Amino acid sequence: MWGSSGAQDHPQRSLDPLLSLFVNTAHHRPTVELLVTAERAYSYGDFLAHTSGIVTLLREHGVQAGHRVALYADAYDSFFIAMLGVWLAGGVAVPINTALPAVSSRSLIERSQPRLLLHDPYIAPPVTDTPAAVITTAAPRTSPPEFTPVSGGDVAMILFTSGTTGMPKGVCQRLSAITGNARRVAAALKLRTDDRLFINTPAYYTSGICHFLTMMAAGASTVGETGFFFGEALLDRLLAQRCTGFGGAPAHLIRVVDPLLTPVRTPGLRFWVSSGDHLPMNTLAKTHTHLPDVALFNMYGLTEVSGRLCVLSPEQSDRRPGSVGRPLPDMRVVARNSTGEALHPGQVGELYVQGPLVMTEYLDDAAATAAALGSHGFRTGDYGHVDADGFVWVEGRKDDVFKRGGEKVSTVQIQQAMGTLDDILDCAVLAIEDPFLGHTPIAFIVPREGYAPRSGKLLRALREHLPASSLPSRIIPVISIPRTGSGKVIRQELLALLEGPRD
Image (cartoon, rainbow, N blue to C red; front, side, top):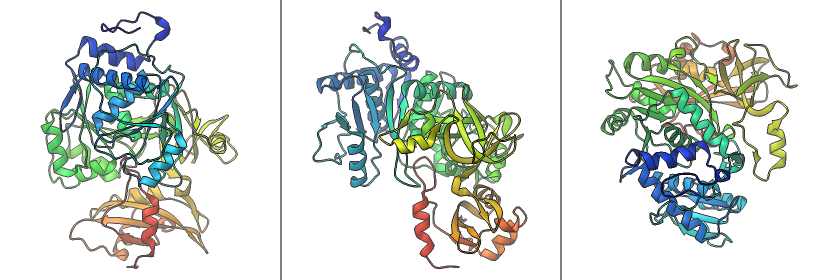
């Protein structure tokens, strides 16, 4: 068993490499910070003691290997402590989005059938009648008990997709895939033990989990603060918390860079990770010139591959603007046509993924699993191409690449073109059915304060970048683009705006 020294007495009780690193760091470097919140800082030693308390609590409630434990928590400390505790007790963690309506949360809990539901003390659980035991995440610190951890090949997480385009799916992930993703990303970022990454993505999102585990894989620390920080306020927080990096959505970088009139020095801040959606080309260019101390990593990922899939390093961003980078080690991305044939470099098709980070299945959904997993690997539903050097370009979801009067159009290309316009702070483009042309693009824009957008003027500017077939048939100004906590556009909310007045 694992004693207080962290030594392993029984090899058959081996820990996953990342969990082993966590335990060993807690024993040999116990005072190093692992997580900093607005309320307190946790060292690795603190975190192990609190995690051990969760393991003891789970044992007292009969949780055994393979049992599911729903996590209804949004505080960074309680969520991550509970997640690690579930894994060290051999259980399967099932994060539940606390921002969902109660009826939606209840549905996800019922679908996952947990043995236990852990919730933050200040959040009322969304269930009143359930066979699962319902207890709070508050657990006393204890010395490490005998761990019975999840084995690397077993499912350790059921993470529900955001459901921005339909019913959320329960993605079943192996522990080896989750932690293997974190270790690969840590290597790609060239993280050091003295790095501190700032996040305010919700802890229960794939992105939040990936950021935290990635920093743990480097023996480094995460600073997590709830709420959304933008622009100058975000830079202030990063510098005040002595952070060396930031991880967030494109909107974070856009709102930091766009107002800058001259280059800004950022002492100590050396890297920025952007993921969740495409970065406008003008934002990429301005980041290089106006944040000269910051190395920008652009990433593409999916819940079904345990987080990140491709990384575009700062060294490659100028040479391949618009690319999401190369796949992580041991992962392969191939563009295929409608019959499943691999396409030549540069040809656009659906992107398929193979490798050890791919999920095992969708929870209790054989039809969806069969549609997504096959002999060619995982069908991402994203369209794009791969160049001769293995760099990946993502054109968008299946509905984002469409025919308009026989001409192929990409909503992502339209968004990139709109992002070059100085008076547009944010935008999203959807393809809408048209009885004559098949589909037409509709653009939703967030104009700069004080700017009164006119469709005619914007369309004339876009003609410098787009063919006539790609010009939006309608441009709708909005106060903000509705997005999930990880930065993805919530399409249903945009579609609801189409009934509004035309300009």
